[in-house]
Image 1: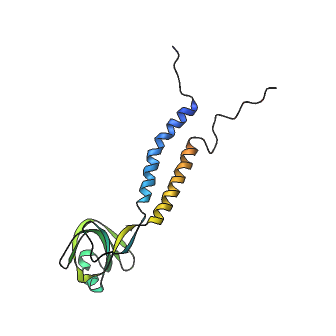
Image 2: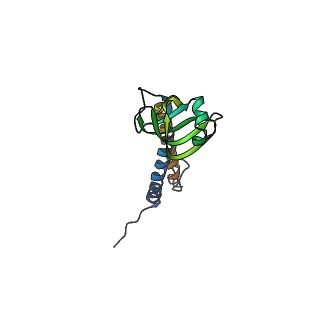
Image 3: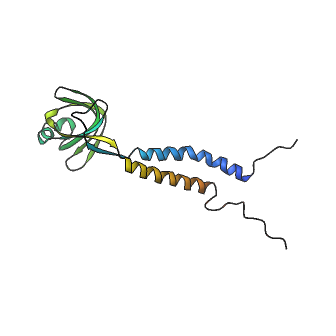
Length: 163
């Protein structure tokens, strides 16, 4: 009884399928960075929002022992707003000279008088579309190259004419 076997083309295509999931995962991970911080829309932040709170000069002096010396802004997720306090799970603190220290979500409570301004994290639509298009095109080129389409294949062309 004859056994059907896959030729070289089928084996190569099946091999490239194993690359698709990791490549798509890497492309999606790149899209995570397409955000920007814009002025807060609305009177105050809502629980769960990702924000950056710019600190006043008096906050920088008063909070130095808690968030680090010379802190200019605190970024993180809003845990709640109660009265005159803003509660945050901090992910990073940026100093006035631009250095950033990363936190692991520790909670702090900022008096509103210490906050000079609030910016919320929003999806940057233009950057996301551009990055998504570039990643998608790159993935198609890479998958095609791995399948032998761009750089040729070992299949060869049509047979030579008879002599």
